[in-house]
Length: 131
Image (cartoon, rainbow, N blue to C red; front, side, top):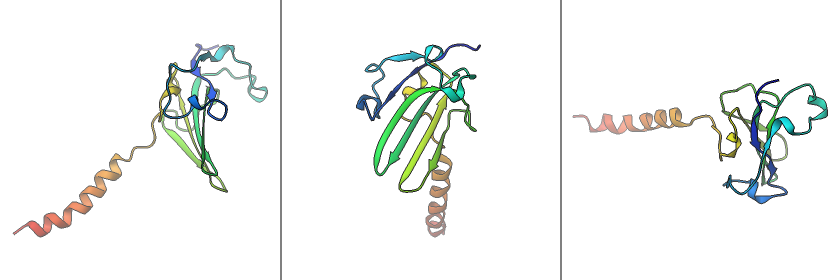
């Protein structure tokens, strides 16, 4: 068995304090090793914390919990999944105690895109200002 991980566990559908912005002092924590195993994952130990933010028909729901299976991206970035009928979800995983408290664990960075866009927009004005 691995080391125990401690995570926040809540669902904003039943407790609005679980949503964003999140007050980490308002809800309890769980030692994932002591949580009942999911039937289909009974052979796995929880090794990470997870935060799932979903929007279903315009309503946002946040679920914070223990996690058992590492996502394709295990460096803390969030994965976005879209479905039909206006359903969208961000799945975020992290491996530190209580790491699922943050509003956004780490969404893919828009900084490179913003820098490129700024450069493209600035070049014409720079060319026009040259003698």
